[in-house]
Image 1: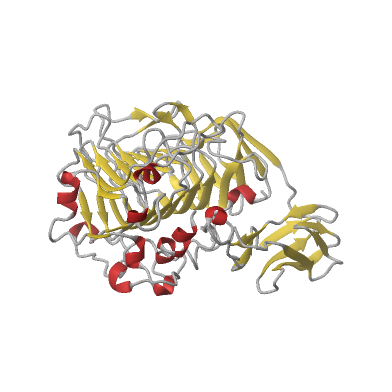
Image 2: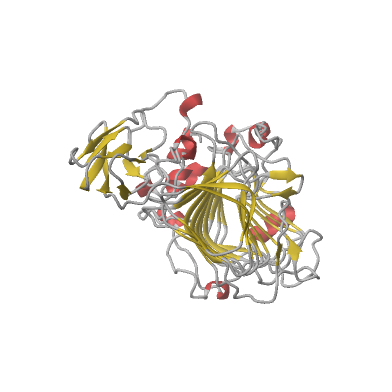
Length: 535
């Protein structure tokens, strides 16, 4: 990400201080600046090991581009455990504390280690085919997804906090929760659950594996009342139960997923098919996805605290009558990666034909921050810089161009409130959207062109909607560019008086966008440098 974006727009949304890992790429800067370490975390806060055996701890220094990321390791009692480069070896039964310290000595993190003959040993678990009875995956397991893995109707897959599940690249491992099945993947801020590539550090990339797919029995708007999930799995979704429960996905990261099976038939990072409101979805990050980071096909599931980081196609895609409520969403683009279908922040359709089928696609989003591929003052850009020449993916996906922060089309009735969009070629593109689509109390800043056409402009600027356009990202930040310098008179003043936001689901906050400038809800569990993380 360019230095300006770090120091400017990202600062608005707590990125400069709170999101140290979302940082600038100084490669093209006229002056390389020293980036200081702001913290260090461990992937585990507690661990157990048998005498004579080892357990691996991974330290993550933030920001990712800190000039000195080296750390030192120490044990409080080497008669109990020793440690070298994060590898902890049990010596004798007892307890000791492992400490990792940054070389400047200013930042530490600890893990309490218990050495016991009864400690659970690491087990290799290969998931393939059908899961036909309840199963629990443990944090001590080495879990591999091989091919399409189906959790059947009536079966619950439970995943303990701290568990790492790797998708096999050779078979495009994919986990599908079928209708009536459940996933209980409830991590914690200190011990998130991670779905990632089976490739080694530095070799992971877009689309290494399939992704996580949830299929439920909630409503969809096609005439059959059900449909086969996109991307190739056999599974169908849809039904008549809007309160259907597919389980829990909380404090979960999904990395390097999203495989293009064939054009317009891709597996996304996290796919929801007819998922009901009984399902819990909170604190989920999808990073480096080879298609859409998140896509909803119908359903009524709600969600909070979602991060779409450097995906290939769209950040948040909604179709086929999706009616959920969502709050606190962050999207960050990489200017080098876009899809041939033209990548957007939001893409929304009622269905592929733009029909009047009901229920309409009518999700309600509030407090969204989408940081696009552009940066700086648009007067300093050329049209070519707005489109970019993007790269092809290693999985065969062709590089494309960027389009709009919001592409609302094909009779979609998407609602967006109290949000901030910046740095896209276009801000709003209303293309045959339903008349009940709403964009209200929203800020655009630093777009190449704020509106795709006159229809989009006339709607966005309608008196009473409270939408505001700023020419440059410089218009909404102070010169020093940290979150405390945000011009609160510009990004403050969120409005929850609209009837659509009267639901108790929505937290009544006083700011637009995903962050308030003080509290970092991504701290501890999110990871913005997964390609350099040891798993």
